[in-house]
Image (cartoon, rainbow, N blue to C red; front, side, top):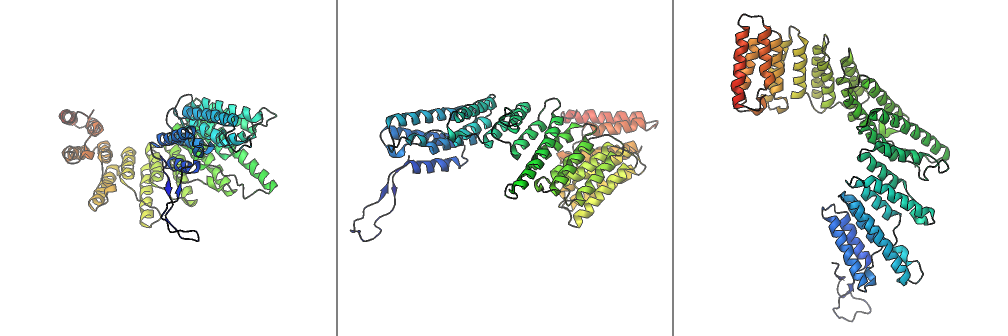
Length: 519
């Protein structure tokens, strides 16, 4: 509860008679609203319950005759906004109930003449555009299944009141964006697009009075980028192009009106990255070409003044991943060319950038792929030592490199893998734990020896894993560790190859009894 505030004792002055009387300020609507605002901004998990409790206290005190604490539109709107921030189930419905309670109190105040006598006192209680916006947002952020539809219904009801003469309830783009976001989050990209389409049309064409902004477009693009609907990826690319055309046309219009740079259109790079990420996960054969086209458009737009969409490391990495996940002659070399392009554009590659190119070489085992992958790792190491990038190669990069060599079937493959493993162990011993080999590293080296018919060395490495895993679980051999050696003996064409393979199988069976998680 709000208690009277002691503002201090005798402060001196002409009228100071020396009495030690206290000046006390009684609770008021303003003081209660300040408390509501503090709770609303607190991010406390129990903020929704606390603000509703405070509001109830105000209402009860007001009905008991204390007109100084009558809640106003700010009181109710703050509570609804707190519900929206919580994102809790049912928060939209609770916000709607508070809106209706506001309307009822406003009507009661108007009919009873409770106010300043000017007949307009009910406006201080009647829901305004901010109240409706907060309630729409509460529905939009709610996990309730029907939340997007309920938010749109509330917006429609508000529009009806506006069209009937309540000038205070003119819809805003923020409300539309909240509903677009709600449909996008619920997986209804088509419904989100329908709202955007209406916003683009004029009122005469059956559209809305509110025009879309950059966020409206970004939300729809992202809705399609993360949608699982058939053809969603293509729709996201289509919406991305529409957004670009809108931004260019809007900018030209603002230039003619002399409104730039105060009203600069800012496109959202996250929408571009969402589409690029979806392309990188699609494994479509033409994904690299499509991703690279988007990347080039981003660069062109950035150079034309839309600086916010200049590709960042996340953008480049998604493009690189489209190459890494595609099987096609020459695709790994193209990925490497994109990496060099990235560096020329002044964007520092991170660990994922280098790994994507290495994965491209690993996935596409063409002649010379292993040597190129080796060159990439050495270049990464040189740039790190020169201070041009923040981190050098780690166990992940070295392991992919070993796998490239193992798949290459080149004569030096096993020897090179052994050299890399030895280097990693040296680095680890020197304190660079990022280079500590794990079971996948050893598996690649084992595989390289098994493929090169140096199966004895492959089995030595397997035996090392079997003994080392007692102290280091990261070195626990898996079924692939054993299978590589078994396959190596099977392909060895040695007279004792069958027996040696059988002995390794026996080792596997014994190991499985002690490690049932090994399948």
